[in-house]
Image (cartoon, rainbow, N blue to C red; front, side, top):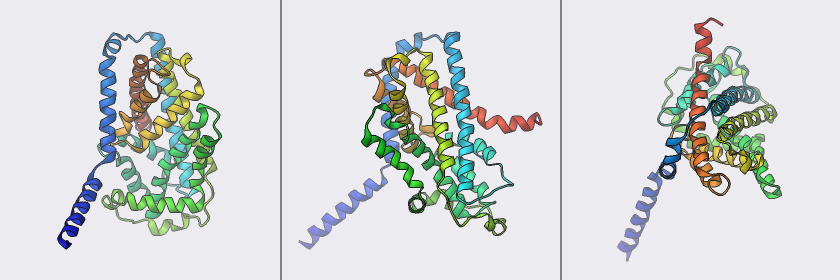
Length: 322
């Protein structure tokens, strides 16, 4: 009897161990890739016969402009957030750091933009504040994205649920969340802890005792999401699909897909996840699938080009001594 109980315990332990080893993000990403690949195959005739006219090209250029500007706005929001958590860094150009490292998100693992920022920040401020500045930035993006989800229709419960996410930046909630995320993401920082803290002691005076609610960073981050959406809207307009859906429904679906792409992906930059969520939520029912797929593929290209251009701003300025 005891042996049977011991055997059952061992089986349960093995099952839980196996479940803990499963990479949920990777599985979801692979499912999204399969779904997206199936859609591309199904609409391959339309995609191969598609020709980009000068009018469509103009829409795509506007998409690059809006998406490019959104990255700069996002960098400025992060700068405001760092100031908000009590850090004043005069020697470091935060916007430049953000733009230079943002392109690293396309490297395998999807963490190297965080690691690079951490290794730079910790030379100017404490490790704790450096980690906090990095971990709060994705949360800021999520909160800004949630603000647009209820625009699909007038649903009081949905408004309350989505807009209440802004409460996570209240000091008590913020400290609790940071503590939990630090425990989850500790390896990102401890495994890359190869830079000596030569300047930490002299920068401790930059850490403020009192932390205020980040009104300005959240406001600027909502503008970032809005500009990101405008870039997406330009890609939609390039293939004449806007009349089929309201702006409110479109920005709601965009924000939801963008949030899922931010949280779930194992692929760099949310590749495949964002597109699959949009196709699943808007395809066929709201928008014709083939033109929508073309818009999504173009938007992925627009986003990638914009990230590259943003990363080149300061190298080009240095090259031409502007």
